[in-house]
View (tube, rainbow, N blue to C red):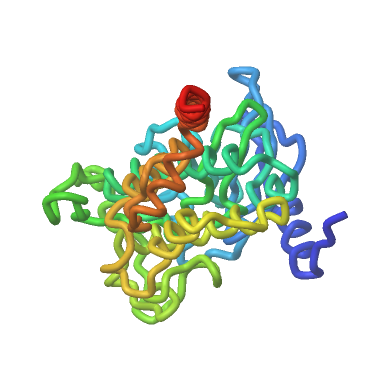
Length: 331
C-alpha cells in the first residue's frame, strides 16, 4: 500500500472540491495521480465515447503563471507527434478558471515499478532504447525534457514506452547536431502561438529536476547552459537504475562504461546525442563493440568467441581429429 502525506491528501481534497466540469464533454471517473502543479483524472469523453486522462491545475494561480505553464505543456505535446509521447486531444479552461488539457489515457506501469519485476536484461535495454528514441525526437524538434526519471516513463501492456510529464520542458532556438555543430531547427514557437513564443521563464539559479537524475549543471541552477546533453545525463542515470536490478548483479564492463560516459560530470565528455547513446546500447545487444569501451585484442576475442562458439567448436574438433589421425599414422 502506498501512503500519501497529509499535504498530498489536502491537495487532492482541494482539487476534488474545486474541479467543475459542468458544461464540458468530460465526466470524471476517478483521480489517478498528482504531482508538480496538476492532478490527473481518468475521465470519459462523452462526445467520442472514450476514456481520456485530464491534467488539471490544482494550485492557486492568481497571476496565471501556472495556467500558462500547463497550457504550454499541452502545446508542446501537441506538436511532438511520436509513438513515445502521449497525444493531446483538447485543452482549455474550466468554468472555475482552472486550466486543463485532455490526453490519451495510458494504461501500464511506471518504469520504477516495472523494474521490481525480474525482467531480462535485454528487455530492459530494449525499453531504454525506445526512451532514447523518444528523447532524440524531442531534441530534434528543439525541446529538452529536463526531468527524465523512471517515474516519468510508462510501459504499456503491449510493450509501449512513453515519456511523460513535459511540464518543465525547455524550448531551444538551436540544437546541437551530433556531426556538424549547431544547426537551426523548425521552431515550435510560431508568432501565432504566444504560449510557445513567450514560454514561462525560470530564474537563473532555480533548480529544476530530480536529485540523482539531473545533470551537475542543472543541479547548480545554471539554466542558460542546459542543452540536450543535460537530458543525456538523465538518460544515463535511468540506464544505471535499470542495471541496478538485483537479478543483474554482474553488470558487464561495456554497459557500465556506457552509463558512465552518459553521466560524465563534464557535458563535453558525454554522448553528443540521445541517438548515439541508444546506438551504443544497440551495439551491445548485437554483440558489437561500443564506443564508450575501447577494446584490446583479448577483449575483442572474449566478445567475439561467444557469438561464434559453434564454428569454434567445429574447428577445434577438426584440429583434434586431424592431430589424432597424424599421430596414429606415425605409429
